[in-house]
Image 1 (cartoon, rainbow, N blue to C red):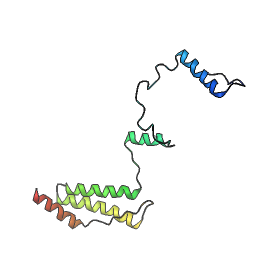
Image 2 (cartoon, one colour):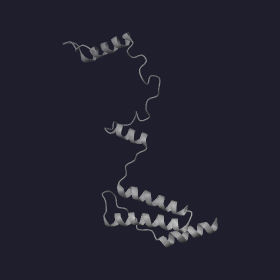
Image 3 (cartoon, rainbow, N blue to C red):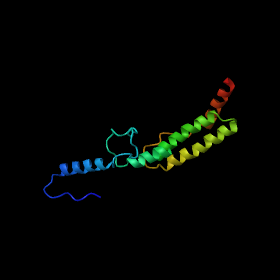
Image 4 (cartoon, rainbow, N blue to C red):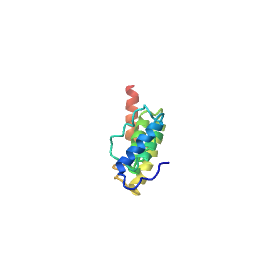
Length: 135
């Protein structure tokens, strides 16, 4: 532990002396991270939630408003329907996402508007059949 700054000594010179003394004792040798590059976000402005964002990125977690999450889920559902093995699976996938879309249409959560309406199951099935016939 360091001693208290003596009265009458400038703060800068006292801190510099503390650093020089620590260097002389070898306290800056073999520090964790020595010789490693600085994190890539070192030049960005300070963010109070940096540690939360870093942990979420490390664990692959993202937080989206419910409507944006549903938009992504709907997009993924259409892709899954396009790659479904059977017409029955296409209908099930589209009907499941339609239920979620209708729920949000009638009980809007906070966040940006959904901007989606339920998919026409027959149109999606027709597109699925056309893609299957081409392949």
